[in-house]
Image (tube, rainbow, N blue to C red; front, top):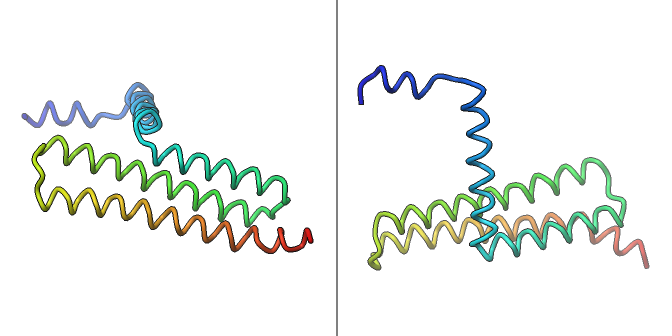
Amino acid sequence: MNSKKQNAHKKMSFKRFLDSIKYSVQGLAHGYKNEQSLWLHGAGSLLAIILGAVLGISFNQWAIIIIALVVVLAVELLNTAIEATVDLVTKEIHPLAKIAKDCGSAAAFVSGIMATIICLFIFIPYIIDLF
């Protein structure tokens, strides 16, 4: 590719900005249409948001929970991207492809466990106070 074409691609514009938002929304939509894990994390996030509202958690606690939930979503989307990339490169069962997919899945699993633990640390004292 010549440098003139590369520079044209890198040129910033409002259209490019809008396109990047469009592509991000398409990626999110693809994830929710095709990935069961995103639905499970979405349900867990909804539960956490409802619990937070019902229990009246503090602003700082909201911030912590929102960060944890967004990290889980982001890692799950990256895992989806890793899986798609591996599938693009090879359809055969290869030990390195398995490692890439398993490690991506493990990252999503670990982030989900971390978010669950954070929610438990925040919600359990409120729930205990109800009794």
